[in-house]
Image 1 (tube, helix red, strand yellow):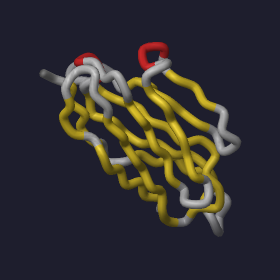
Image 2 (cartoon, helix red, strand yellow; image 1 turned 90 degrees about the vertical axis):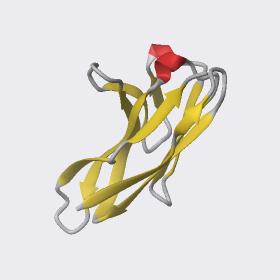
Image 3 (spheres, helix red, strand yellow; image 1 turned 180 degrees about the vertical axis):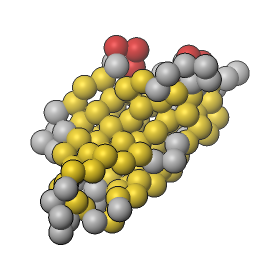
Length: 121
């Protein structure tokens, strides 16, 4: 089993900043991609940002220039720094990781439990 535990989130006014963190633990041989997705009420889950184990990143157009994803491979953690937040960024944010399990070398893809981000005045 591979578990992802998220922290951060909360409520902030438009224009404010928040930081999300996610730590992976369990039977991990290697984590390839880590990322953040979000789901707003009544909408499908969408990609926010992803980062590979060599640091290549990809962002949704809606967050480019405002959000920054980073990771610490040694600690199996991924962070999302969110600046200039807008009301439309309000959603539940989910951490995601995919890689290989230790022992079996079988692939895994795991999700965190989600953390609420609310941008409102």
